[in-house]
Image (cartoon, rainbow, N blue to C red; front, side):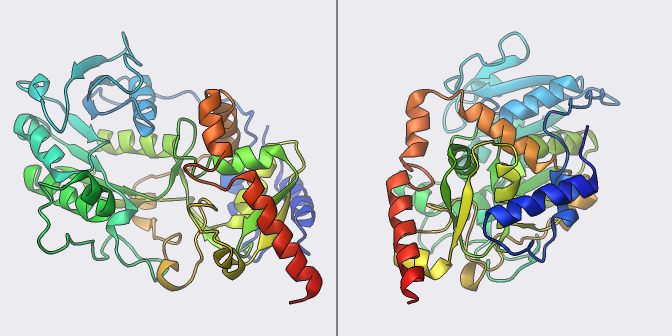
Amino acid sequence: MSPSRRTFIKSVSAIGGAVGLSGLPTLAFAQNERDNAKAPQAAPAKTERAPAPLDILILGGTGFTGPEQVEYATARGHHVTLFNRNKTRPDFFKGRVDQLIGDLNGDVSALKGKSFDVVIDNPTTLPNWVRNAASALAGHTKHYMFISTMSVYPDNSHPGMDESDGLTPMPAGLDPYAVSPEDARRQYGALKTESEKEVQRKYPGINTIIRPGLIVGPLDKSDRFTYWPARIDKGGEVMAPGNPTDPVQIIDSRDLAEWMIRMAEGRVFGTYNACGPSTQLSMIEMLAGIKAVTSAGAEFTWVPADFLKANGINGWRHMPVWLPPEGSTAGFTRRSNAKALAKGLTFRPLAVTAKDTLDWHKTRPPEEQKTLDDGAIAGIPAAKEAAVLALWHAKQKNGS
């Protein structure tokens, strides 16, 4: 059973005291009660069948968001076909979905002569992948859904910016259809922009472009959110970045996946920012919400952004999810999701996302867990965290 509003606020107030705050931030936890307060042990509601079954093709489907799309789509009664190289979690859904083997960057012959109600394109990074798939799929689907990214926006300086904001252009002289691997890494946002344009050319009037923010939850190997549940579960003094009220945005992969399937059922076209939650989330709300599903007794020490920078600690890379809410990144974690909310995007409680992510992390192979502990992909190694905390405490003690 979910805790009462009074019980929830009292419990969070206790957390606030544990992290050295005299009171809650201005963004009160009560504002986010709908997102955060539901007990993670609550049984999930039974998935209802869709009004009419769809024949859905998912490009990819076995990575991060794809499996959640498959689970929800099949639970809703849809027929699902996967097209991929069958290398990431091979035969993951064997016997439950149809499998077509091919490569968006090469052989797409397995798609020839087939038609689908909906195509969901998860993995595309390069516009020639869209073009290759379209050689078989254009004219053979009623709806093409493309997962893009917030990285298509070059300007992140203003909070509340929406889908009408300008997009990242390709650098002059660089052919988006013939880029080197190095250029592909450097020009991620520009190439996603070109991919969006290719989708619009190949599937005019029947496309949906989704621009997610930071996608989190079980199966996420990027460690960009997983770092926090894993670190907080270890207990002790935890370095927290910036100010407690600094804004953050995350979306659970299951919320994204389920919303996309519902959008497919409703044949909803257009372009949408997919970031969450429904109301602004602060860093202290996120960290305290994560702490609430652990029992290790972590305590947060807030270290200002300028001190972190001076000591080689960067937002997003070493302190995942967070970026300084000023200057060029002032709006990065405050993008408008109003358009998506109006089309039914919903969010499960933070407690559910945190607990499920932590539970999944504990099942990962030891080498993956070590990668997170070492901060190889995201996060900060324990020794570096302790060193910076020691410097911060010394600075506080000396009053300098």
